[in-house]
Amino acid sequence: MTTGMHLETMETERAGGGRAIHEKESADELARRVIRLVGVAAQFEPFVDGVLARLRASMGVPPAGTAGFDDPIVEEEIAVARARLLELRAEFEAIEARLYLQHVGAVHLPGVAAVLADERVQRLLRAQAAMAADAARALGALAEHMTAIVLYEEPRR
Image (tube, rainbow, N blue to C red; front, side, top):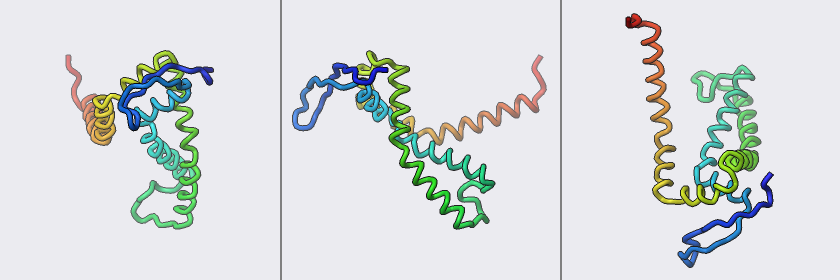
């Protein structure tokens, strides 16, 4: 693939200087920097939670925090599984980096990384992460409303 390929990138505000310097960065290193800038790491734990939810379902165990369910042996098994899954963070990030490299393209990654490093873009990305739960609730309510319209209202003619 592009492993070993080096790209010229601009890095600013380095420790002690604040001046722009050029350095060579492999496409893989640059893709990893891009995934850090877009906050892919924050997606890992929810991904693990989803895997654990599927594991619980396959075991016939209710979702975590279900009232009335108290089986310390099962919960210990789930905790051990969580710890094992969390050890796979590097593999998750490598997959994400490879996908960014593939879909953005090695020649575009330096420009993408430069734009993503801008504080205004970082503010937008932080806002998106902060509003994700609110958006999911609002869109869930909208989906229920839309379903009710389709199922229960008379068709317009």
